Length: 113
Image 1 (spheres, one colour):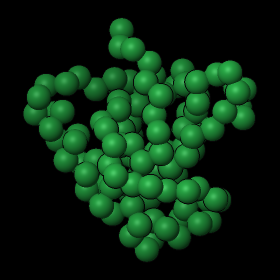
Image 2: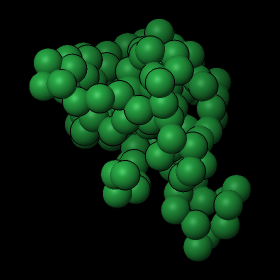
Image 3: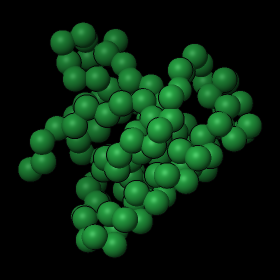
Image 4: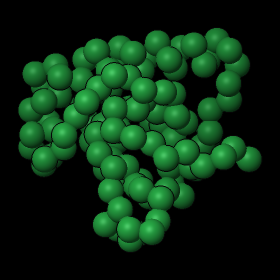
């Protein structure tokens, strides 16, 4: 079993259920409480906001790929969609795809499958 990983804004993940890479656009503690590991909001490369994952769901369904260099401040879903449409996440998704390809070629298993 892997050590739990606290994801940060701008990190790339692979979401096996959708067979897609995603970017963490926010972290939060307001659902499970301030003492819990943070949950995350996930944006997929096709622009779908698949919403939040608590720490347990993150461990089960998201494979961390690494930092993309994205520095993002989430305000609301409308702004998130507008930022995606204007290409703000483009370089981060490119970096995420490269990291996923590297893990795939290295034979790293994907979780949640």
